[in-house]
Length: 130
Image (cartoon, rainbow, N blue to C red):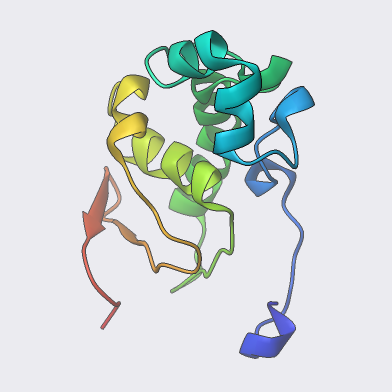
């Protein structure tokens, strides 16, 4: 997709898809029908591992070094393409929110997330970048 947007792609493992274990490729309705208790736990506990995969807390820990690298970068602007669950982890980590807050972020596919680093901390700016 990066090439279609006129961007030079650079794969980044930290922004790879969240691992949903044996839930991978299942819809939420399918998970609810086959594993309702685990689904309920996963929506309330950032330590829960969906389908045996990666917890939200783990995801936040994975993206944190990438955020630190971006904060130290001399690049004027970085565009990152990532799945909504990964973007939840990015926002939670950037804003130093408790991981449980990630369950309250409803991010749509291809929705722009604009984060700015001022040399000390990250700030989220709603809407499209200037």
